[in-house]
Length: 228
Image 1 (cartoon, rainbow, N blue to C red):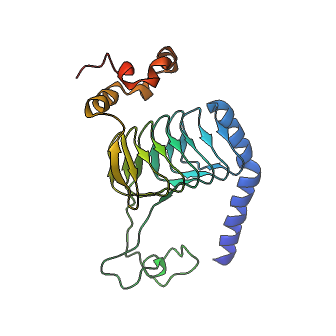
Image 2: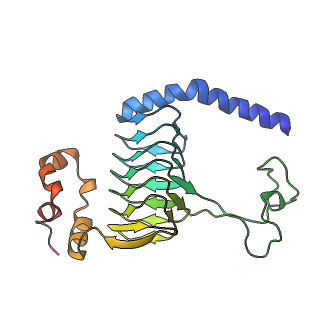
Image 3: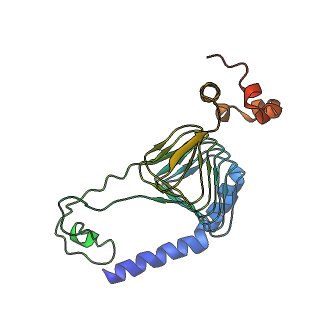
């Protein structure tokens, strides 16, 4: 078992050192993206184009929508990220759980025979951790040092302040902060929020965005043709 673990670890290291840089370069070119040193995109992740991954940022089992970026030292798993979303430094997801009810021990060695952390006492798997995916909308801004728990849903246009811990659901165009993150106020009036959600400008093509770029400085002008 120890030998197999070391062989697997060596194979992974060789892949990251020699094969992955080539794959990353080709993906960077084909998607017109920027992937900084130490960034990593797992095989089961998707980047849609014009993306940016900062230094030492990793995504595993994620979808990174068009135009979205994650700054340095990010770590994301099982997450769907919308379009044009801005994510700061040291933002991470916390996915997975432990048996809180009934089981006498929390360590996986007592519930999973797979020896996840090198050893196990379990004869069979007695705890199934059904991790819920995280959903982050479009045009979201997440500040530095934020932790996002599994199953969280951050609505389109929402803001998450630095150092927050996100659980549950944050409404579209809300401004949130704290541990856990709570809504402080909204960026726009209810009428303006409804119009923006109907417009869904982030789904427009670049030609449309360029032709309306002056309107983006005034939400009322951008949405003036949207009816209730």
